[in-house]
Image (cartoon, rainbow, N blue to C red; front, side):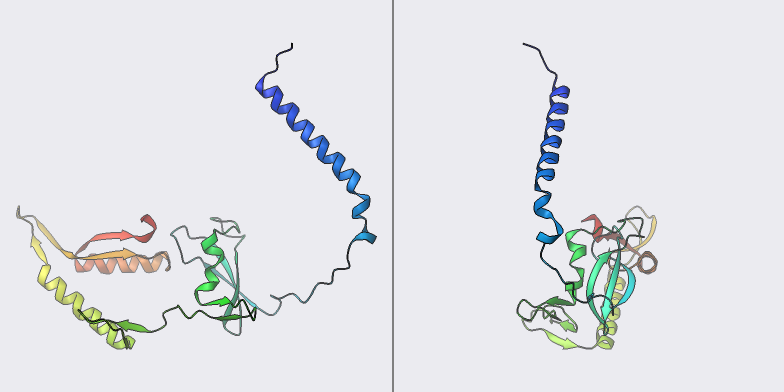
Length: 206
């Protein structure tokens, strides 16, 4: 009995599979003749009237490029940007559904409707409270600034236990965002450094 190596076996298996596929395709060709195919009529191209905008995916820190299609200032479709060197047009499952952040396709009407779960207002819950209050941005920004200053003033260290100058606060931490670009993250990092914040990280590392 002639011995056959694993490599030769896989070669023979591949050739045999290809031969069977070609034979089946040739025998099925008459059934796929043009006169046997249904007469499909294509409808209007849905993205014809949309505006294309190149952007970056707002999820992880990879920076994949996306093309946003919008109509009447509403996002209607998302696809990967083939000119982006990072993803070359491909998108992960999260990136593919990024358009659902602001709206999603209703199952009954098959039309895009606003995503009711998206938070569009400033919500504030007081310490010990159970209800959310709607606040405006002026109040929120002012309140955040006051609380940051208060926390920094109360926890700022000029020198450590060994007498080394550190000028830091360990009561504040900063988590970078993948939904903004590198320049904005850089400015946020410079702001945190100027406050003496040393607990710095980024969401893409979690």
